[in-house]
Length: 95
Image (cartoon, rainbow, N blue to C red; front, side, top):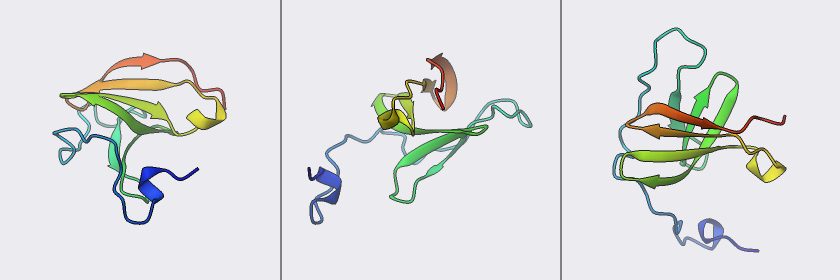
């Protein structure tokens, strides 16, 4: 199956968040749970928290839902951020 991202120069059909250019964690510095925002090799937003990495899944204004990078392998762990601050964690990693 061909996805919009890989279909010969067609851009992704996902909507981008208005604050995609603003990255930076606001958790307590020095903690292992400090979120580190960055870009994947394909240019998508990702956040790393300790050893876990999450891909941006959906956004509603400044509220963003992030899902574990192993979601396709059955991991249901996810987090929600508002203005780059983690406000909710869902599920547990199964790997």
